[in-house]
Amino acid sequence: MLFISRKTETAPCEVEVSHCFESLHAHVKFLNGAIIHPGDEVLIHGAPVLAPYGEVVRETRTATITRASKLEQVWTRLRGDFGFMELCEFSFSEEVSV
Amino acid sequence: MNKVEQAAVAHSADAGNVEDALDAGNYRQAVIDSESATAVAMQNTLLTPRFYTTDFDALDAIDVSPVREEWDRLIARMKSDPNKGHFKKNADWEQIDWDGMDPKLRAEFTDFLISSCTAEFSGCVLYKEMKRRGKNEDITTLFQLMARDEARHAGFINDALREAGIAVNLTFLTEKKKYTFFQPKFIFYATYLSEKIGYARYITIFRHLQKNPQHRFHPIFKWFEEWCNDEFGHGEAFALLMKTDPRLTRGINALWIKFFLTAVYSTMFVRDHQRPAFHQALGIDPDWFAQSVFTKTSEISRQVFPLTLDIDHPRWKKNLKALQRANVDLAEARKNGRLIKRLFASARAGLAFVALLTIPSIRNKVPERTRLEPVY
Image 1: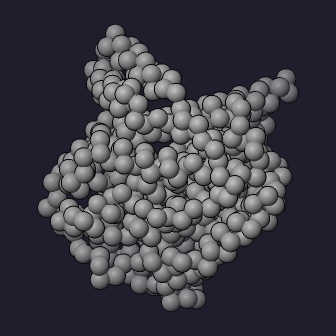
Image 2 (image 1 turned 120 degrees about the vertical axis):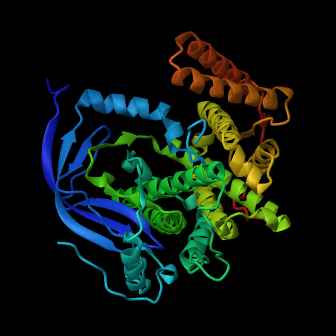
Image 3 (image 1 turned 90 degrees about the horizontal axis):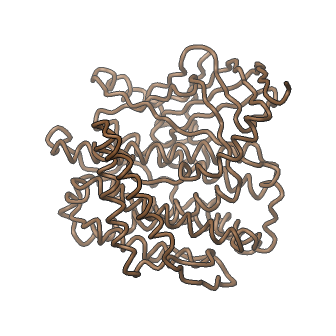
């Protein structure tokens, strides 16, 4: 059963959203040192973190980490290699016309 | 418990790292802008960056000693931050009449800005994750510096979007997100190529507009030179990383590289041809542009890849065009729900891709020294 069962855990995290002219970024840091493995899902609780333009917002939140089963982990690793085009950047979306 | 940063340096463009940038003094002005901007109804665009994980133990195990001298010089230059302060608007930034812009051009240019912003943003998320999870100081230093550049670029594009009345929405963080996995080598091939092709694209547009300024329909193109020099520098770092382990560019991995090159070049060709108004406004023929970018990228990639694609082969352009036509037909068949046409178009696209992939590549002897300068 271990092979296909999924476990969830909660972790405190710091969310940082910068919506500034020179830095547009958003990061999540787990404060208890939790590590994310392939196929895991992360859900941060609470209302969306909104940073108005020009602001940096840092909030401490709780996250639920749904651990991928061993099977999913192996599958995510295998599939990842074939989804490499996701990593490439092009100037335009894939839509044929906009 | 929102926490708002206090002003520390005059302008965040002058800050040396992400953290300092967030403490900058232009923050207050930006808040005022933000208040006035809320008065205008903004179109909302949800940014959807991707979340990745990789083999962090393998990243930590990288030993840059074989390229130490070149590595240290590159990192020193990135630390000196030659583009610090560059990405802010000055008198060269003319106001654009967005409402007066041809709707087709406006839609395509907006697509360009949003796609570019998402790409920079995703790069920032990926690099920051590598910085945070890594323990190898050489590697974490590099990724922190690259995350700084990407966040800076994203902020700059975001500002251009705001002028167009488009606000990016960063609420994705509270959505459930799944972390996909890539081996470090795939991240190296893909990001190396993205950074170098990005450089080749931007510098080609920049040089073209230097000669033909009447086609510069938006001031953001004036910033392309420094922008793409950052991209070039990031590509250099990935080239050096690949040089640390010869196995990354040998044997089966050489086949992966050929596959990557073919996939990336042909995707670029297809996507550019889907934006005719953008290219027409710039006065750029997409066929000429593609070939010009492929030539530059191939020349640059000889620093580390064991092969280049034969972009002058008679089958090359013919099958790029076939792929592009099949892609248009495929999208139309999908829209109209026509299964047979869809299968037929998919098969044509597949055949064209195979025809491109089977063009014999040109062997390349990788030079001893890797580092290049952006000279185009």
